[in-house]
Length: 92
Ligand SMILES: [Zn+2]
Ligand SMILES: [Zn+2]
Image (cartoon, rainbow, N blue to C red; front, side, top):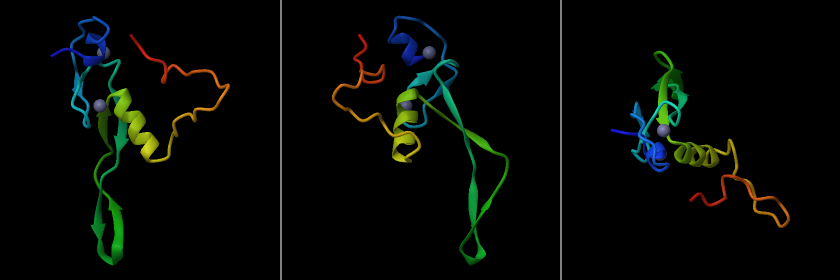
């Protein structure tokens, strides 16, 4: 399987991971890895961290969406006079 993002640019790059949200295959350059801390419920409504820190792999789109939903990186507001960003520019 080849990387979806690379294939969209007419490049054939072997995939090394799959986005956990949308399922596209990704090469090492396009795979965005974030740490994932697992926890379990304990007595007295406590949450206890367990095990080693694991990881989550996402494509850049899903990573941006998850970050925006969590309020970590809000999408740039579209204001009059602001220069267009690379993210909002159509890519052909
Ligand atoms: Zn790629
Ligand atoms: Zn994705």
